[in-house]
Length: 206
Image (cartoon, rainbow, N blue to C red):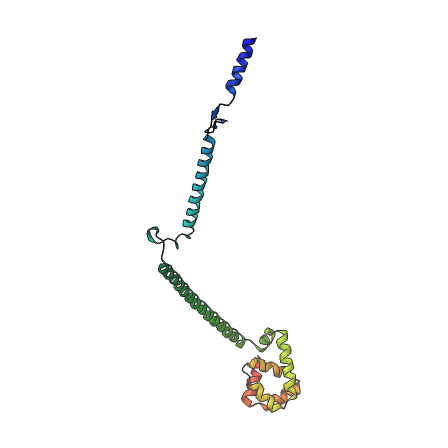
């Protein structure tokens, strides 16, 4: 039994941390191994390396690195950077001039198209009969011509005839005469020359 107790005390003594003396003679436990610290430092180094490599790759592929580096990876001088900026500005001015020219060309084409559409519309109206032309007008146009007709009907017949025969759109002139009261229309027609009265009659009877 005494031997068993002695063995237990010897085992406990061996399991206690070893103490070493410092320069002042004090005893302290021995330091544990530093393997964990070394592994942690290596991991941090690898992470930093990956981050730096990723940042460099991002700058390269986005083109951000190009203005900062010249040929062979050398840094561009101020003069080279200024020349690059001037070249870029010149290219922008050239592109803007070309865009303005294209826009002007498109505006001209649109104007030509509108002119052709107007000419086609006039040609179609010229081939219409008086009733067809009158039916093609909107209610607002007809109402406006009706008001003008009433005004001309109250004018002197000779003055009204002079204004009506001077109108470029003969169909609209005919509508004005058509909307007049019969007596006023007859007086205006009588004030016209025979040629003018014949032309007005031809339009009204189409």
